[in-house]
Image (cartoon, rainbow, N blue to C red; front, side, top):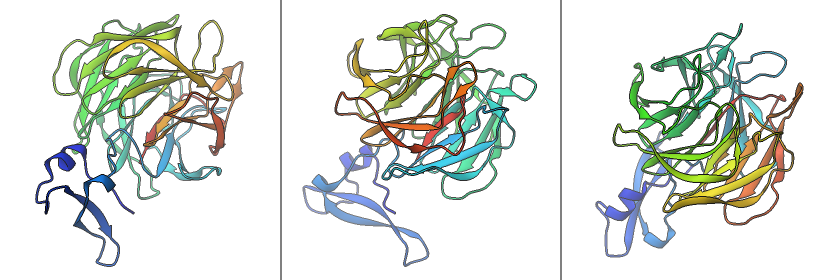
Length: 338
């Protein structure tokens, strides 16, 4: 397995050789799994953002006929049915997902009996085991959006007894209660999350749907700013992220939709249409590779659940294609990538 170094190290070329070269970290499987540096031509380096994956997508928890603890894993490179990858510590649904370079995190949600949870679970991408407790959100809530920097996870919005504008921040490296990290511009549930290398975004949501896309800095605790607008007001969509754009897929308007649209991290403004999902659905999970977005599971309402994994290219506006299935049809699960 090869994991490319971060953008900052590529630019800095710390310890690099001659001009035009950079450094890459490679996993040396012949020497007890040690990491080593390798001088390479800078043109061959691939920037892998902290919020994107190179290998696998994951879904965790959700609701099929009941609350579930399932964690699924599927390959970005091939169209196959996902495999089991362990379980969360407790069954729940309507959760958010965050991803570090080594672990997935699932936060908040409804517990069995429909009480709200403040738990943050952590599971390793590299091993199939039951997730462990990784602290708590500042307040228990559902329908929140997940964002990820290289060091921290964020959980934005959601519903407590009413819609919430809370943005929580927790460290990937330590098990502690999350801290307050400012607020969304408006309180809302059913929000989709996107991430750039410096900012988190929260799109749509609310009791009746919204076009609002909020932007907040990972580095400072401030109220988010209204950054862009979706093409259609909607809620219960999911989010994906390329290095320069945020994507919002599916959701509910007056009925369930198959819309995919994108907004730019650099300029905001009104989002642009980017094709459609293969099937209209909401309460899905979103995953991001370096080149493609994935939308897994979801529901059309009325007890109709899906196991579909859709795939769409970040670079072209086309209808998403089938990319296999998760292990069980379900909705309200979290999305992760590695």
